[in-house]
Image (cartoon, rainbow, N blue to C red; front, side):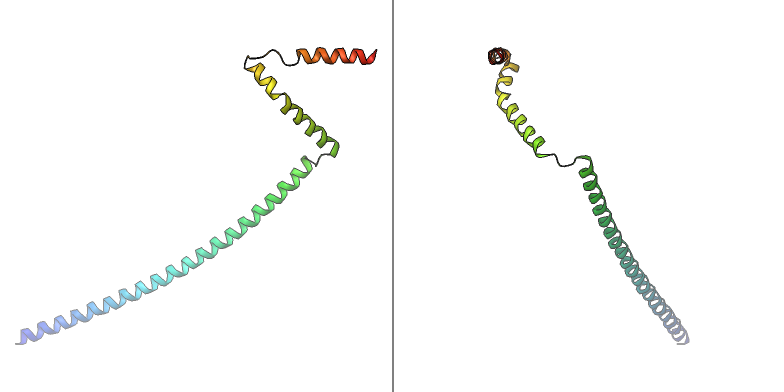
Length: 126
């Protein structure tokens, strides 16, 4: 009977050791989890700060780019805009003639027109 009693005391002590170790591990896990939450919150704050900084830098770069574009390409005078508009209208007018010429379906598009213009100019000068 003493041996059963001694075995029960050993098992009881072992049980206490296991329960104690379990409590210690649970406490370590809780501490580790708390540390992870703190670290995650810190990382999130860092990310948000970096995002705001990057957004601010991007806006500054866009403003600088716009400023440089204005300096490099100032708004043209109305006469230049008018001239450019008429030029592109002329280009669009002559595209079909050039297209046919480039496809080999028509002669050089300005041969006849240049002769007529030259004749008109000579007649007007006379």
